[in-house]
Length: 240
Image (cartoon, rainbow, N blue to C red):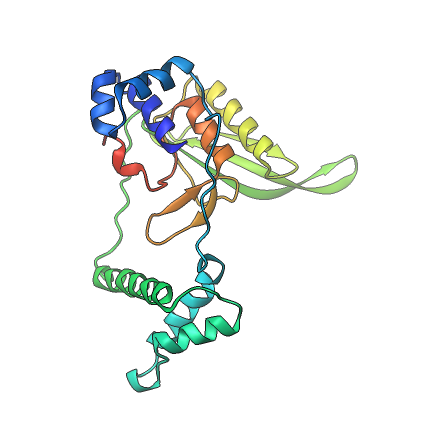
């Protein structure tokens, strides 16, 4: 699904030839042609991603590693002890899997510490049509004499700061899709990329660093409107 999104963006937004798309993505020209000719926004079949045995215990293990990092070296539990403690909670994976997770966690933490104090810089300049931001908030209104909680959809153009607010009863995919449709209708077009804050309707799982597992229904919507979704591990294939 992510690759399909990239192919459509390269063809429709960047106006690249089929030969160039095939070269950049590593997909054959026949495959690129087939996807573009079908004009589909969803694949006819999908291979479900196999969940790692450690995924259900990832938050627990990351919490333990953070706690152990604050202790003196002699007081810390070893990775072997952490593996045994996970097994006691029902983990059936190997010690090597836990050790690999711990190495990645420590590497990420070291990078964060190295950048501490340097500041985080977010570009405040956006070109016209470059990006939009979307988020939810909660508010209340009196409907039929009763105070009712509403879910407010915020969609804002990053360059002009023009925005649209719409109220919905829930934060479902149907409400999310409706809010985007109305936003693009009012703005008169679709920006090149969307900026989101890890919404549950957009991101199924937040991984290490910038890794995101994008929700398939959400990704189908980005395919339909041909804009760049949040990073899902395939971002390196997109042209900058």
